[in-house]
Length: 84
Image (cartoon, rainbow, N blue to C red):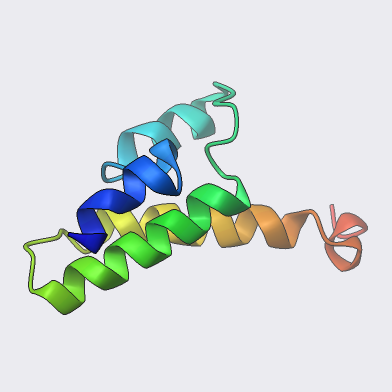
């Protein structure tokens, strides 16, 4: 019940696997708030609850979305601004 309600109460962007949306982002499409902190936390919480409940969740999609969200947040830190 908790895993299914994360998309409704935390973030709509946390629903789904995340791979098609990230392919679109890498192609240059700007998806507003898709890599936000709220979507990242919703994806982490929903995936964790789903695994704990024994639901059949693909491992690739959620972890790709989580890794992209973490990388997006790290890229905005001051320490990483001068690398590029």
